Image (cartoon, rainbow, N blue to C red):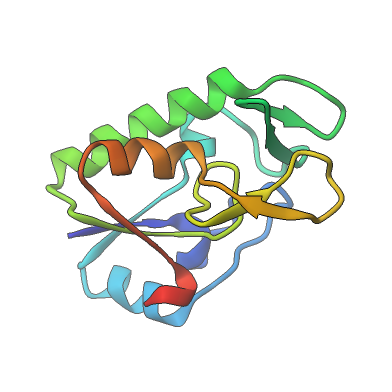
Length: 137
């Protein structure tokens, strides 16, 4: 079983209220091989919401509000769902402060990418779950 970013499954849960559908992910969900999840919504954040990026080990909105606790809480809840379903792999949205797996935005809201991983990706990897992004499937 896999866990996947809900936005890749076509669920409108991104910060901008939109989705980023990926047909391969949608097919996995439709055939019961994957569970869609949005750790940011699980952390209590509304959709749509102000964009957020990682900076200095914190998640900050564009206006400077610290949402680190919400992102961490959502990641922990999503991890529990992954474990309950014996998920061994995850397919997560690239560049996200939650789900990015190779590169994330640098925290300046200037569209600059840096090496890094999102909070949810990090906790999954710490728990032995392999993480891929939508370009790696």
